[in-house]
Image 1 (tube, rainbow, N blue to C red):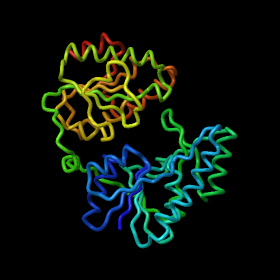
Image 2 (cartoon, rainbow, N blue to C red):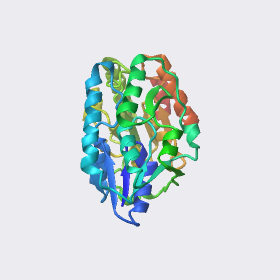
Image 3 (cartoon, helix red, strand yellow):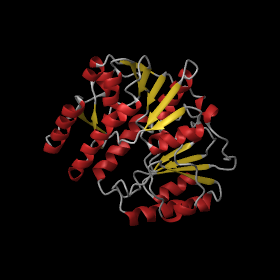
Image 4 (cartoon, helix red, strand yellow):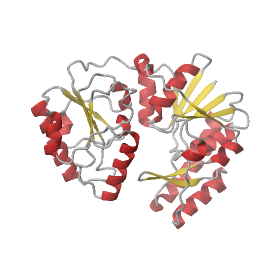
Length: 343
């Protein structure tokens, strides 16, 4: 059997699904995820057996949630015995090295009687992927020590752009005899699993996140700026645009609410092969591989400079992250400049 632990929604398109499709020709496949949107995608768009873990794999809880942290660790021990303790002679795959601590504890136990594989989307060495950061927070030290004591996993803290996560590193791979390999990207995989979506008359795709719930922008400002964008689209592309909300988006704001929308639980990249004239995003990493997605003639616009972030440092870090992946992205400095781009 081939068992796939998918912790990150973002790993579906470039890594997980191409590999699952390939391995399904060799034997039975089981997909395991705790992510609601990942579970919806696999159950609605693929034939693969998928089970949803009921334990939050990310054990980085706030100081006021220490009991939730303990509860998740206890639940994970019961869940492992129920679902995985009898699995032997199988191939186990995972795709992320950070913030899926419960998954790492399962993998460490499964490694005793199964082969473990880590698949990266880039040809980077493991020691380049994982760059531990020194944090002096007493709470972080307590969490790390507690996880080591209860789950037996050595972890470190990593800062990637503005995000802080707990990750495993080289020693975890060596200890569990994990094969670190690379998954070649299959550009045509989306065609096999995508249902027909009527996009024939659409020219503009909008990728929108919930920057309010993420604490980056206040609700009033984000609503006003969302409205400004919709008003421009109505003027220059009436009935020719469609919204794709981020899968973790709890709600849309202002005029965004009643606009035509794509299913949020499908990775944005699956919709990129339509011949869009313009793709607009608030700060989406979905635009960083235009050559793969036939978007070389499409205007790719990131609105991170226009949006009024609470923290300018985070705003700059997000922009630098996007530029590092795709320096050809367009970054309008105002709605006037955005309007000129839409003309």
